[in-house]
Image (cartoon, rainbow, N blue to C red; front, side, top):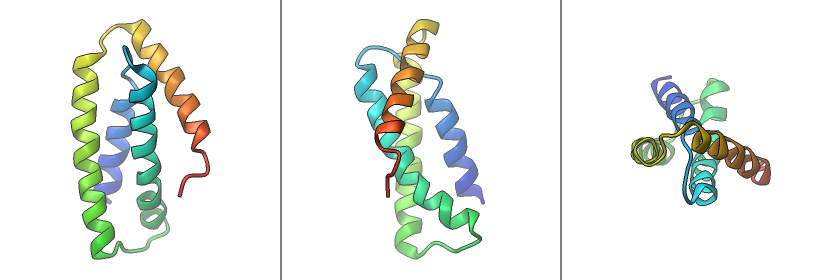
Amino acid sequence: MTIFGVILFASFILTSCGGNSIESDAKKVAELQCKAQHTFSIVEAGGHLSVMEFKESTKLLSELGTLSKELERKYTSDSDKQKFDKALLIQRKAIHNCK
């Protein structure tokens, strides 16, 4: 359950950022969120992660945390945050059926 909470928290933080190279940053975030979706589905279904899945989710959490901090420093204006949110929404739709 802790993994789920951290991923969810990181996702919220990441969606509040924006700025230069917004599209590429939004794509990175969307791809990481897509990877996290698999872990969400296992945990939400009450299942257990394999050792490999646990290691992957730990690595994913580290990447999300690092990217989150980077984007918080990189993008600070409200207009950039709005642009990023829009770009992220577009990227999420583009990879809607991620696996």
